[in-house]
Amino acid sequence: IWNFGGMVLAGLAFALAGGCPGRQLFLAGEGDGDAAIFVFGMIVGAGFSHNFGLASSPKGVGPHGIAAVIIGLIVCFFIGFSMRKKTV
Image 1 (cartoon, helix red, strand yellow):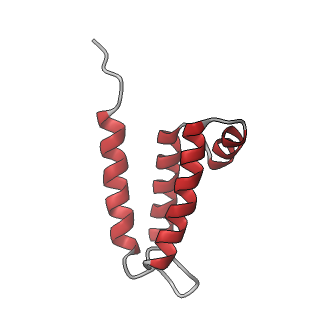
Image 2 (cartoon, one colour):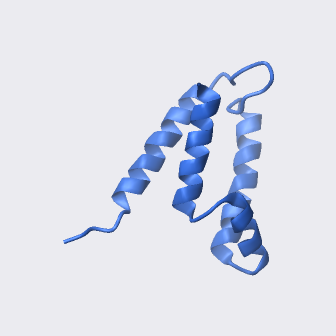
C-alpha cells in the first residue's frame, strides 16, 4: 500500500509541477529555468530519500517512508488547494 501511496504522491507532485518528469527534462534542455530547477530537485530528492531511509528497497518500506508519504501528500494537497484559481 505504501508503494502505491508513494506513486500517488509522485503523480500529484508532477501534476502540480506542470507535467511528467520526461517533459520537464526536455524543457530543461531547451533552456527553461523552472524545469531545470525541477529536474535538479528530483535528483536531490532521490539522493535525500535514499540517504535518510525514506526510499523503499527489496527488503521493504524504509523506516521513515510511511511518514514521508503522509507528510508529502498533506503538503501537496495544501499547495494544490491553496493555489487554485478562485471563481467569482
